[in-house]
Image 1 (cartoon, helix red, strand yellow):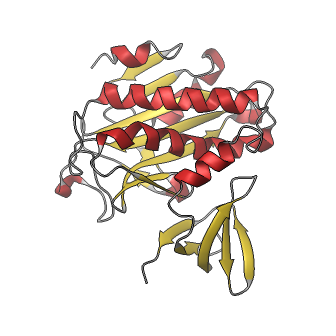
Image 2: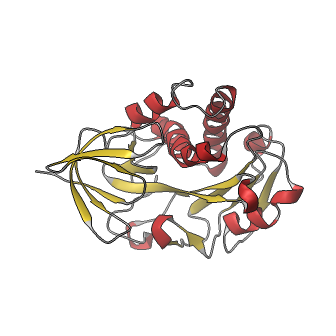
Image 3: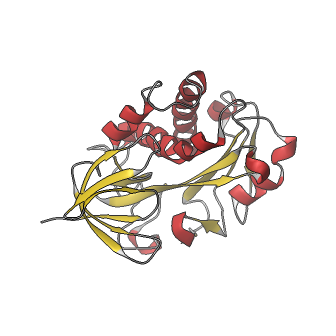
Length: 253
């Protein structure tokens, strides 16, 4: 696929026939490429997810996307918002394709009826000069091809017109729009109103949750909001906790 629609949206778009990890390839070439350069492949053999997970799919059934972000003038403290903006952008791109729409689970998993169709992984460049924003979208896997019982694909969800270029171009339109808003506000998620947009799209808010923390502990409570640093605020019997990292499970009582 030549990705004609997507090529018109960014300064550089390179389609790789195969890659171990598009994030790794883009990171290694970041010094020679401009802001918003994009690498994609439909055959990623060594993809990574959040919290050290792997993401490997049969060739031609998923789309791995990596976008180079070189946010000149933004404080590195604001970089933590980019994974959330990536999840918001992807949810807006996929929502019109799926009967019943999609949801976002904090920080950036995109779900269809509770099952994961896309994950986002942001990785910093050396010297905090920017980051690579990776996304993996399940396009056409069958049930037997999906890696877990809690994952799904656009095909299984009954999406209309599954086309890799359509998905990529819609994502890039949404991502570049959010990026420009964030830049124009100097990386301030409150002044740009992006914190409110992310919170509004996040279906974790208002839900009973279990958060498996990096320490190994579990936090049980109700997700009540997202703070100015992008952290999930969980209210429990012990009070309110700001969660910067963790594996969230939506609970059903």
